[in-house]
Length: 447
Image 1: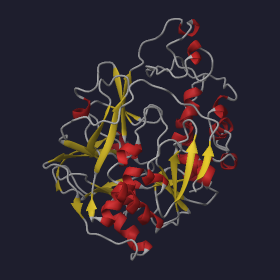
Image 2 (image 1 turned 90 degrees about the vertical axis):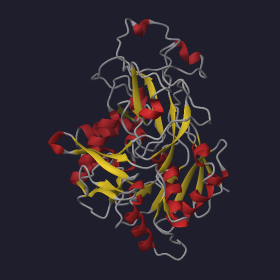
Image 3 (image 1 turned 180 degrees about the horizontal axis):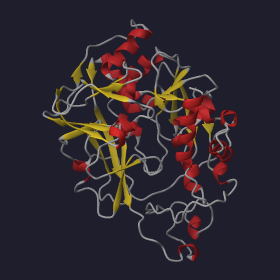
Image 4 (image 1 turned 135 degrees about the vertical axis):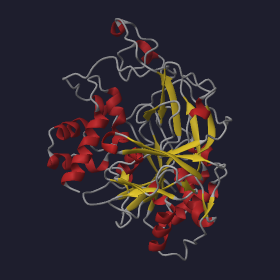
């Protein structure tokens, strides 16, 4: 019998443009990119140069501090560009495909007979170790450390989030194979939704399943960790997403390195929201063109709370299963604060829209004001279902009080866990940016 945890705090932001569980059609793009900017704390070192020919699974770059952590090409082709930013920092490695994406043969390995070291070595050799992120800090996991647990959230509660039950359909056995592999590294914990979760998630073997009920951020893996097995000082926990678990299962059970991904394209600027079969790091233009109204719109790789703004010809983020297109909020609103606001979403009862809780809203990116000095007390706590005081933690980070940051639980949170705190803040406090600065400070001072 699975444990059931009901979260009483949170907020569901209902947006227009939710996708039905249908698939759209789009041609495979010509360009694919792996972006070092998707990995916090990474210092990449190139293994190839522009013009080099690569095969799917070949190393593009690796971590300068931990060379065993490799980032591989999702397709076969030619390295068409190494995009650099300030101080020649590597922003993206772009590969022009010369063949349709296909799985790569890497040889099977039975986890039942393999040692933990052999499993980790296989994951490092294939580049699949980069699917793991480590708490604290949400960085690429350290393969030499012993984590106390591995957590998988099998549902996403963010606005317009993909349905992992739909995405995983047809790959249930690969998911189970992946969980079995992970259980050889550390105890596995699976978080499932209380409403209609797939048996592939609720009845998975070699893992402890916990059922969660409640509003966003119930689907955030950090919230689930906090309620099931909190992180204490000095402990490490790994997190991984369902599609990456499937990819790992295929490596060991089928001997195939598969970079196929299913993403959802949604948002109020999308004419036909749908799911699309694509490949890790794919250029988004083929999916967007003809399906979304891009004039005056913002394209986000990820969800509206934590995603990254990309150009229409940009690339899918490494950990993203969602692309959202919403209106760009570049037009000021005259006397917007004194209107009844029937078409506006409010986390409080500022507008009369609270009378229609089931309504979907067409929201843009306008923040409706600049940051303010006064912080309204209690706003963040109302939507934050963790045993942490978010407002006090933000203030401790701004004061660079490391001891207080540790006491207030900075090791347990990353940006996605506190994104709602930023959304509801009437003072426009950039909570996610402040938190990342605090995490970076902890890495420097504590390690």
